[in-house]
Amino acid sequence: MSRRKHHEDHVNHEAWAIPYADLMTLLLAFFVVMYAVSVVNEGKYRVMSQSIIEAFNGTSRRLDPVHSSNVAPVAPVPADRKNSQAQNSVLPRIAPPLPTRNLATSSMQNGTAKRQNSEQENLERIQDQVQRALQPLIDKSLVVVRRTKTWLEIEIRTDILFPSGVARLSAPADDVLNHIASILAPFPNPLRVEGYTDDKPINTAVYPSNWELSAARAASVARLFVEQGIDPSRLGIIGWGEIRPAADNVSEEGRNRNRRVLVVVLSDRSAPVRFYSDANHPLAEVEPTLTPSAPPAVDKPIVVKPDPPTDVVPINTSVVATQAPVPEVKG
Image (cartoon, rainbow, N blue to C red; front, top):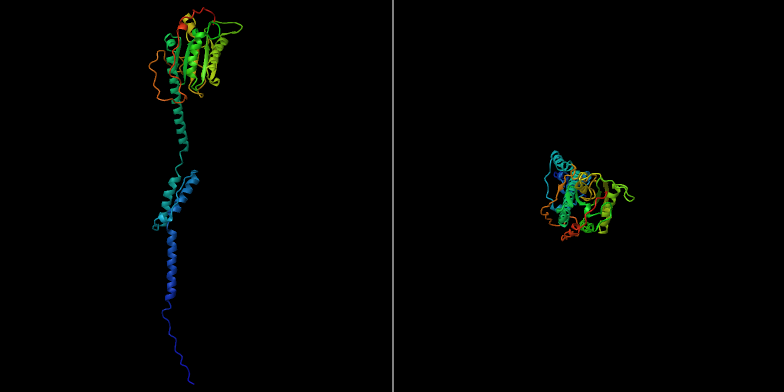
């Protein structure tokens, strides 16, 4: 039996190609991963920046979703440049503080200015209507209308309101005060009714002094206003007596000017309390209007609803003119 001849195995000289291909594949995968890490995801970056801004500023904004299909590929950015861009894009949006206090102050100032303009226009409208209604009495100096920056004064001589020495309203007083009440009722302004007398002392069981007499006269006017529909919470009365005269008490004309009732229309409920009603007081800045010019036109109502009546019937002065002369009595 013959022996089988063994052939010598040939050496595979191309075996290195397989591990080399594996190495190349691993290197390719490595560089792909590094590239993916270095690429900035713009959508996620914007969301992160917005979250940081909200955390510092306390504001909330609505963000539209970012679709990855709409994001263009971004070339790799060096690390130092990438950090610089991140600081430049995020920090300036966080650093400046929100001017919330300035905005609030500006809003309050604008609201105050609008309210003051509205109050001034209301005072002008009241002044216009009172002057047109009481023009005959203004011409006879029985009524004086004055306006300052914060209030309007309607001064009425007591000759047409009260008999001498008493606080009971006379017949002509109803006509005058009813017209004033109808003008003031639609407006929200606070009202002060102030009574004044001359310096002649009065000492009766009802009125021990001029203080009681002046306060009672102011209360009578305020009571009539309430009967005509004015809210009592808007009203206040002051009795000055012979204090703060409008003229001297030497002549009869001066004493007659001092016997008066003042209806004061304040600008609003926040107006300061008036301790002085003298037209010559330095803080008053009074604008006397004894002979008013054409009333200012008002395009539309500012605060008052409904609009105050415009057709005002003039005062019938025949009753005042025919009133019997008042004898000289104290007070």
